[in-house]
Amino acid sequence: MLNTAVKAARKAGSIITRASFDLEKLTVRSKQQKDYVSEVDHAAEDAILSVLREAYPDHAILAEESGRSDAKSEYLWVVDPLDGTTNFLHGFPQYCVSIGMLHKGVPTQGVIFDPNRNELFTATRGVGAYLNDKRIRVSKTDRLEAALMGTGFPFREVSNIDDYIRMMRNIMLATSGIRRPGAAALDLAWVAAGRIDGFWEIGLSPWDMAAGALLVREAGGLIGDLEGNDTFMESGRVVASNAKLFSAILQTLKQKG
Image 1 (tube, rainbow, N blue to C red):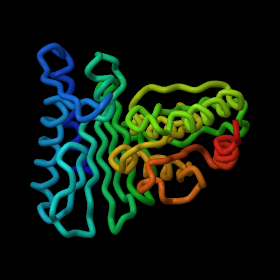
Image 2 (cartoon, one colour):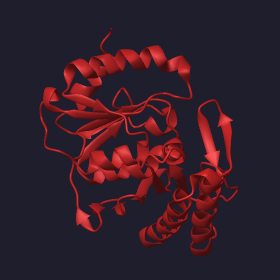
Image 3 (cartoon, rainbow, N blue to C red):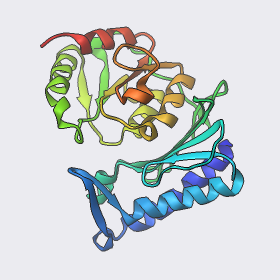
């Protein structure tokens, strides 16, 4: 299954990379305010689904652009063909392909492919997390004031903006810095690789998190919702970090402004 996901991710990555050389020719439409989709998203998703369906015709699929398939199966592929579409459309080189597999609701396979850096993040439940076949681990940072945090702004649900600004202020005051690259799946992969010490965001979808959540866990990290519970895939509110910082980040996010 992991090999199939890697094959699908690389195929989508090739489509995305070819399109990145001539962005002005792309057809782009707005799904809703500040949320865009291009023909590249659809082409990359079609390529992924073609590979998955050929290998596993009976499996269910949940994909960002085409929704959920009608198949009844205990296996569910969760697909984001291009996480960071806005970045991609501006030529900002921070986006990725994300493919996760859930078995009976539990993430068991995860692939995140960054075509700009040719970085392939993979994880299988119980086997570990890898970057280009080299084992990766979350950071060893144990003090919040030394931590570099990643986040994403709630660009769809602006009703959350005041709550988010409170959280951001708390984290800014407590840590060494915040980065907002703009592709949540890749942010989670970077937590797994120890490039950032922690990450939080609100308003995410399952395809933003399915592969990245497994990567974080298999790299020795923790991931949960804002209460630390395992409902982040449903709520879209997520916190991820190493085990030494996790509770401190949760407490900081809860502080009143």
